[in-house]
Amino acid sequence: MSNNNTIAGWVLAGGIAALGFSIVSGKYFHAGKHERPEVMGFVIEGVEASGGGADAGPSIETLLQTADAAAGEKVFAKCAACHTINQGGANGIGPNLYGSMGKPHGHVAGFAYSDALKSIAGNWDWAGMNAWLTSPRKYAEGTKMTFAGLGKAEDRANLMVYLNEQGSNLPLPAAPVVEAPAEEAAEAEAGADAEAVEAVEADTAAAAE
Image 1 (spheres, rainbow, N blue to C red):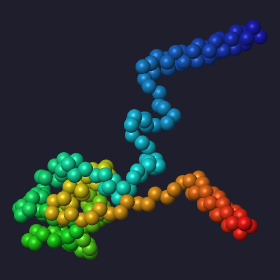
Image 2 (cartoon, rainbow, N blue to C red):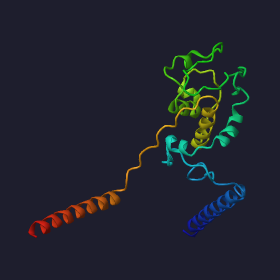
Image 3 (cartoon, rainbow, N blue to C red):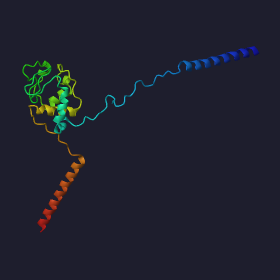
Image 4 (tube, rainbow, N blue to C red):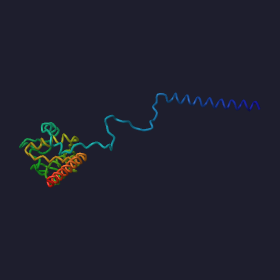
């Protein structure tokens, strides 16, 4: 009986020793290694997650009212590698842009416009030029224009005003009408009602006399 207890004791002690060795060796071989995080990836400061509801900001029509042609000339420096804008200037990789606002798409004689651009009806108006400067490829799918576009609406507004001063002089589009807040409208309505009541009271008093 005592022999059996002794054997059982040695087996139990061996099992405990093996478990302890396993734990110690595991910690030793994983020392200095990073554990796999529960959530993969990391956050980059200053970069918004996709799908975020960013404010669209003022409309292009609003921005055009205060746009700066001098600032637009600086933005045009990004275009100067391919375009001239002086009157009678030569075509480069892109057509000369003098007097282009208000003209039909593909209006410069002798320049080999892409079929994608020539197929767009109408003239270069404010809305069309804004869409083109935002993304030429989206405006005319298949265009030969390789410029990615201007992401800032302020840059597009300034550039369009500068382009317009170079031989076009289109009138600016009307600024959007800003509706009065509901509280102001309610106050105006209450004031009109009060004036109407005062007018009725005055008429009644005059009739009584």
